[in-house]
Image 1 (cartoon, rainbow over the protein chains, first blue to last red):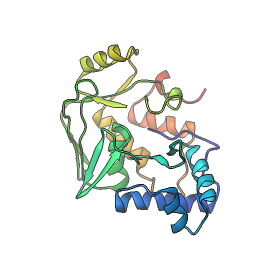
Image 2: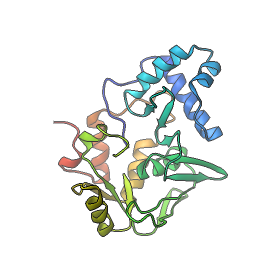
Image 3: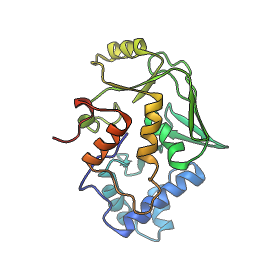
Length: 156
Length: 72
């Protein structure tokens, strides 16, 4: 799912550093770092981390849970979802089918996506190999128009 | 943004959720869209796309029309 726009851009070197740190942790460990882990690793305060995450979340590339921890680090999900993506021995979860395809697109790797039909839940595995899509028939459906994607992100 | 086996399965899902049908794209379009959208995400200076940049990506994938509009 796309990030939105405009004025919601990382506005400091710290934001850029934090964004890349989170991505690198997700990629190398398969897990999203906690606010406390970010603060420790970047030698910062949790207050500064939370402020930076709020700025980074304005674009919706990152999204926070109510407790301030990350929920979404697009295309990764910080929590399990019905869109598991396997690359080698590493497993991640994506937020939707677009993001599931986004993980191998972002990493430039072969991947297996354990997708299933949104209606009947029957398995619809998707594979990316050498940059090519390998899958059976399937149609992606987006329920709401682009302008409304962020009114209810979980539903979208 | 879900994957379905067919248009019939989309219709069933819309009926179940009491939703009008939304936008659809093929898996091939989805893969191209993902590449255009996320291919640069690890660039240290990455910035979110503007609305017009996003629309341009949609057009490159063949996603046009009011459903995909973010500007205007």
